[in-house]
Image 1 (cartoon, rainbow, N blue to C red):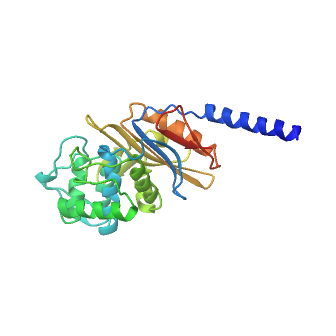
Image 2 (cartoon, helix red, strand yellow):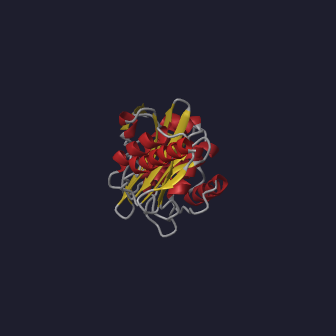
Image 3 (cartoon, one colour):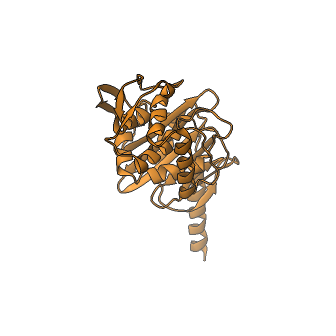
Length: 272
């Protein structure tokens, strides 16, 4: 009996130590780390708070385009495709393939590319309608989108949980992954470098998407595969997003159990 009590005390101590060791210090206002294969959330902080998501919106835009357009089809660029913010520097009158525009969308985060791709889907309104329908199919129940590029809007929002669902879905789309995991692309006479530093800094990173507006702050969605496991991480309004994603993956790949615990009395949960 005494031996059992000692063993139980040792296990309890180890559990408490594990809690302290992984009381993650994440700077983001909202964050989620999800197992892309099972949908199980490994860490969460304000996961259901509706927030601006900036250019991480373009993950959804790209998926809609891949469902409805041929990569080799072309789009004639017009003045209406010019947009504020980040750009792949399209010029009115040039004809660009959908594939080239997708590289411009996911690597250069081109707002002009987003509008040109919307044109390939029948126009901005039909494209946005398709985006919201796909979001509904994925189970993004706390999201709504009103443009294809992620510029701020009152009816343009999502949550860390919903964006993790989107990333998990996207992680199973080979063409999307091929493009968003490219560090540098030479297509259509252009050279574009991926804004996602994690591709160069985190083992097994398969890309996804960065984002920023003044109102949204820094947003980041990423995906990492190691030893047959795929995890996705989302941080919203996070001034330290690169470090936070590294921390989340270090935590996630070091834990395979499913015991729930709480961290620091804040609105955070993670699993060990």
